[in-house]
Image (cartoon, rainbow, N blue to C red; front, top):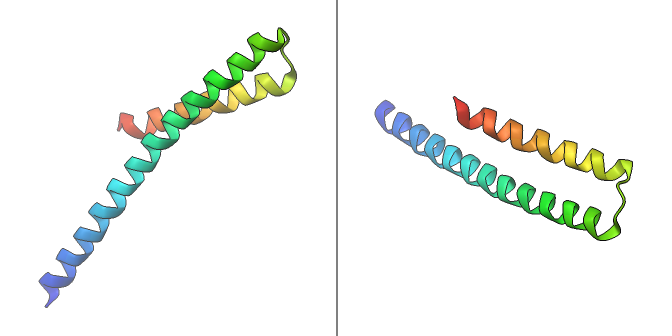
Length: 72
């Protein structure tokens, strides 16, 4: 009986871990897409606002956090 609980826990842990990694990959791709959209908007408007810089900084931080997660 105790062995079954351990196997169930291990299965749930594996499912959650796979889900977490899948979400992080999706977030990385969507963040990269947002960067492209932001740079396209900057080039189209031919002006850079403070909000554009802040968004790019946030996107860089998000990608950095995802990279740090996969480093270990």
